[in-house]
Every structure is written in structure tokens, then in C-alpha cells.
Length: 153
Image: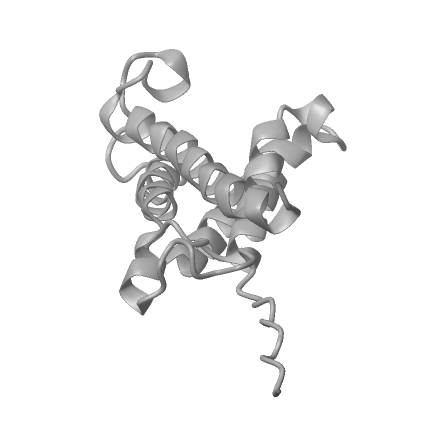
């Protein structure tokens, strides 16, 4: 298997998993599902700053990234919200993510930045809407591998 062929399969799986995990954080915060906010089994009270709004962003952006719909804007918003969470919530407790408990926030921020840079990939609603088929993109970054020109005989 060539690297572009593997990337065509692995990239959408990465995007879906990151989106799903992020959406699960939103479900926990907004509705108390999956253990609730911080494992309490309870949702975050509506309108509480910044937790409730963060959970709303997590659910909405996570679902959009999972589906591959408006992927780049959703990923930029998700990345920014996690950067905010890292620097405002975690960073005052210590310099590094291991010290301040911000590993998840840092990983999400960088993962979503990568998704925003690369895009949704071939297996996404973005690709379906734009008319691309899953097998038509040679590389997930949108770069095309040029076909060799037919020789004239």
C-alpha cells in the first residue's frame, strides 16, 4: 500500500474519532450523559461561563467534524476553544501540560488545528457536497497527483 492510499483511509478515521470524542465531552457537559460534567453525573447549569458555552462548542464542533461538514471552520473554533481552555484554565496551575492537567486541551487544540489545515478528506459531507467522490482525491490534503500524459504515437 502506498502512503497516499493509507492516508485516504486513515485521515477520515482520525477526523471521525477526534470529532466523536470531542462531541462526547459536549454531551457530558450539556446533558449529564457519559458521566456528566467532571464525572458528577450532572450537566453544567445552563449559561454558566465558560463551562456551558465550552460544552456547546464541543458538541456542535465535534459533531460537524465527525460528519465532515463545515469541517475547517468547526475545527478552527474547536482548536481556539481548546487553546483558550489551556491558557486560561490549565496554564495558571503550572508551566507544562503534565503539571497543569492540560494534556487533553493541548492535544485537542493541535489535533483540530491539523484538521483545519488538512481538511475533511474524501469521506466527508464536505466532499460529497463539493461533488468529489471518495476515490477521486489522491492525497487527503487536496493536492492531486498528476496523471502521466498520454504519449503521442
